[in-house]
Amino acid sequence: MKSPAENEIRKPTKTLAGVTPIAVMTYPKKCKHGTCLYCPSLDVPQSYTPKSPPVLRAERLKYDPLEQVKSRLKAYKLMHHPTDKIELIVMGGNFLDYPEKYKLDFIKACFDALNGKKSSSLEQAKKINEKAKHRCVALCIEGRPDTIVDNKNSIHELLNFGCTRFELGVQCLDDSIYKKVNRGHTIREVIQASRLLRDAGFKIGYHMMLGLPFSNKNKDLEMFKKLFSSQEFKPDQIKIYPCQVIQGASLVNLYKKGKYKPYNEKEIQEMVIKIMQLIPNYCRVMRIMREIPPEFLVAGTTRIDLRKDIEEEIRKRKLKINEIRFREIGFAFRDKMPKENISSKLKLRTTTYDASEGKEYFLEFVNKDNILFGLLRLRIKNQEAIVRELHVYGQSLELGKKASSILHQHRGLGKLLMKRAEEIAKKEKTKITKIKVISGVGVREYYRKLGYELEDNYMIKKF
Image 1 (cartoon, one colour):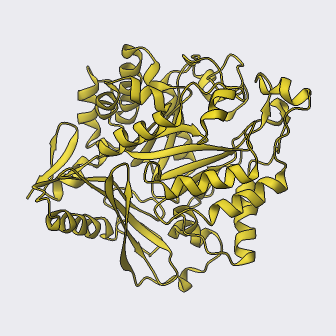
Image 2 (tube, rainbow, N blue to C red):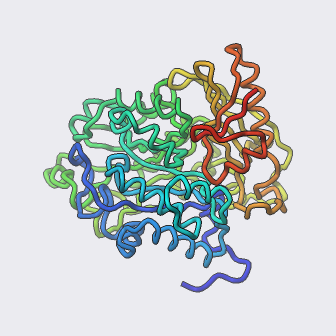
Image 3 (cartoon, rainbow, N blue to C red):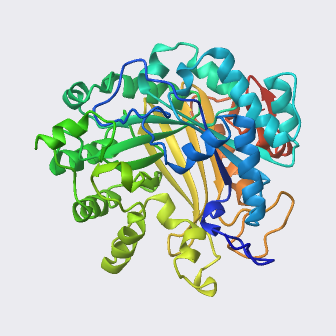
């Protein structure tokens, strides 16, 4: 690969959302419940293939988390991306089901790599990272709903790791399909896990699948309508994965017998366009399609960049889309909206909705064209106020560096969002006496400057 020019940022999309993502992969481990019908088993982390890019990188480094983080930091430096604000993503399996020592050592190693030094404990590593050069501003872990529900210590573990976001493998909202594909849990666990995670302040992501065996287009569309109409769900973000027939999956047998046919590219595109119009302003579509190497694909579309075509078609049809990523300032500029045409006059808009037996306030700074510059999620339940997310969008900047245009962060929007959240909490009739923030370890210093103190893994301000 040719080295980038002096001021060129290679693959700028990587940090357009304001953070620098680093994915690390755990060693291969089978799921306790067995294997889902559509999931490949190929002696690599469950659901992945041997030539998936993160697997190739992890295998080359013998699944060592410290080396994986160091490798990504080096790559970002070569591509001229800032690495001050890191979003750490733990991939590869149902992390909470791994042995306790492995989990602690894994997370500690990630922090050690960011800190550039080894610590004697996870707590020490987190403390160092509060002021480190590469700060962990968000930590995402993936897993199953039943693991959250069945493991009574799961929420405490996640908070101790410094986790701020949890992605649930939901796939569908149909118990009969769950049973037929050997999913190993029911909708009940999805509802319970969503409530437990949301009550603890975590941002919640759902992995959803289109075209599963025993489903159809009408069922899929109704599923997404239910996802955002029922207070039992309403995720903060989703990943949409059309079901594909992959080598090593039991689904191959059904396909060869003519009993299953995946959606084709055109069907997926039309389905996703309909779904995108259903998604509310408080939800972000993180990904569409999984990156499956063509040689492992028995049937299904090979297009991993289908999102680009979908969004171009949406613009061509002039459809109204409210989901977060489509409206972010960084992507608005990337998608050919001239900088001089982006209005910098912002208004603070508040959306309220019920979810998991609590009240959610979604605050967002937008301009006249509904372009999104920053957001905050505040949850009120049982006399408790908790900020589940604070995020200012735009091209990521180094810590302490001032914004030079409306395309950048560090314009004071975060402080204004926090101030408004505090005002809302104080006005609640239930007489709330403090506000909590589930904060990435590397953001604790920011909240201290706003008058917050660390208490039981949360940043807290008393009124």
